[in-house]
Image: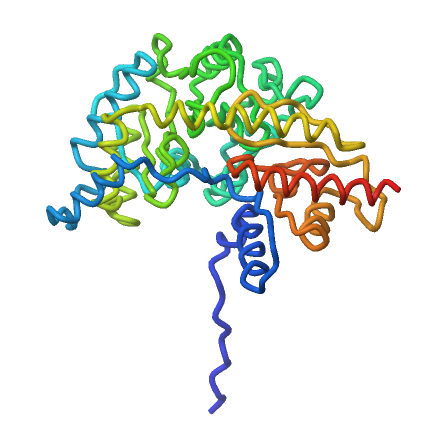
Length: 400
């Protein structure tokens, strides 16, 4: 009798369609060096350095004290859904109802749910470059295909409807817009946003708008395309409390969209995470319905840091940068030092910057470009000063 042939255990093919988050990798490496006693300045993770506002923390504590620690509805408690719809309505003039709202375990989870319930293998998704790292991977995971639309750095990485239009085909199922943008900080012109809405609506294409950084714009007023007449039919909103209220670890995001999309996403969520954390949901209600002063205070501090970062980048020989119009990221072009000391791309630059200068930044390859690094200025002024002193010294040493 022949012995049974040994069978090798393997991973599912689809997991090979995605990569580890580059921002998480940078943060992990920086944390490792810090544990070894290295003085690392971290500009990698896009995480506010402000504490969660006191009233929000107290609401979470009350939830624990009142034993609000059991399962909730998979898509979030009704009171939080109402609060989300109210806040979005007050801020942008929209009229969503709880049936058009779901609560998720962070904005990234919202995006994952949307792509899973709306995309099929072979579908095409328009993704402007540079893009947030997760868009590419979650689209790939569905078996759909990303169609990348390169924006112009000389024009501030701004996107237009005319840039998108030539890439639309019969297979196009979704267009993803992130404004303000992570990583570039670019803010989409309202008029262009309306043109993109019209173009997608006429073709029956989903328009997914990621509003994670919606409150952090440095000129004009925050804008949501969902407020436009008829937008609710093909617009799906990704929202998050993480950045707006400095609640990254609380993991509360939300989606607003057509009832059938929300119902499908909640069905999926009921078999994955179940409900978002009950305690965090209560804190989120306070964040949305309580005082909004902390949001403006953070915006003003980011404005101050942005001005400092712009000046420091300008002072570093060889570096150039499109000034960010929103969010809290700088995306300088570092190609002037390519060819120096074995540096041929932004990945090489970021690795050497961390190794030699002990400054953590995310290479542009994570966002679809090869000449940039992303610097988060959601960091203290002292860290910004120390970090840019090191970056300047590092770059100048390469240009000698």
